[in-house]
Amino acid sequence: MSDNTVWHAHRVDRSQREALNAQRACLLWFTGLSGSGKSTIAGLVEERLHQLGKLTYLLDGDNVRQGLNGDLGFSDADRVENVRRIGEVSGLFVDAGVITLSAFISPFRSERGAVRQRLAAGDFIEVFVDAPLATCEARDPKGLYRRARDGEIADFTGIDSPYEAPQAPEVHLHNDGSRSPAVMAQQVVDYLARRRCV
Ligand SMILES: Nc1ncnc2c1ncn2[C@@H]1O[C@H](COP(=O)(O)OS(=O)(=O)O)[C@@H](OP(=O)(O)O)[C@H]1O
Ligand SMILES: Nc1ncnc2c1ncn2[C@@H]1O[C@H](COP(=O)(O)OP(=O)(O)O)[C@@H](O)[C@H]1O
Image (cartoon, rainbow, N blue to C red):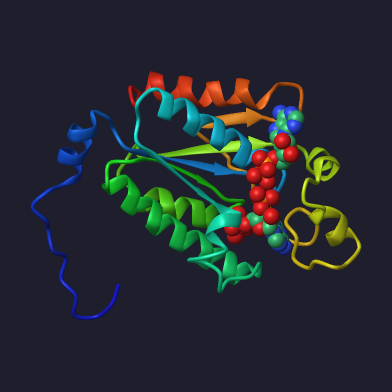
């Protein structure tokens, strides 16, 4: 928090924005290794919510790192700052009344926990896209694992940079390839329906 600043409450608040859009906002936080299926599944969930008439926004690691977080690399410190900023942006989207989907490796438990704490109870829904490293490496759609193994990319998650799996995610998707991304996206939508978010 900057010094000498005072919070200003505005005339239109989150609940009024939610009422206007006839929806309840929340943050779906997709975490998992590179290649685990975060973007694919988050994209399918967003498409389904859009079809249901919900206002959504999907924030994605590769995309955000081309703009807002273009100054950050993949050291531990830069990943901490990456997730902190995304947590703040996600919080603003939720306050805007939008069902927000954030898909980032977000490898550290403490930083994911900090985003959870930043939001109101129940607004943070952790979705663990759980795929074995061997599966992610076999998919390797961008050739990054091969380059990391060849020593061309340092600090690669799962190779020479850690990934701390969630201990109690709200939704745990086993994306080892035995089921389609569409089936797993439906699991997320079903969770939202049980929570009366859709
Ligand atoms: N060193 C290293 N480690 C992991 N990933 C790397 C690295 N370098 C580049 N990439 C590409 O960056 C994407 C991950 O960015 P994130 O912002 O999600 O990472 S993090 O949350 O800060 O850990 C990741 O995208 P996904 O594969 O979609 O996860 C990669 O395309
Ligand atoms: N259940 C699945 N079965 C087959 N291929 C999958 C499955 N889930 C994801 N993929 C593929 O794996 C690759 C990585 O998925 P992606 O969503 O880009 O992962 P991430 O965003 O976690 O890096 C993509 O080519 C995607 O089509």
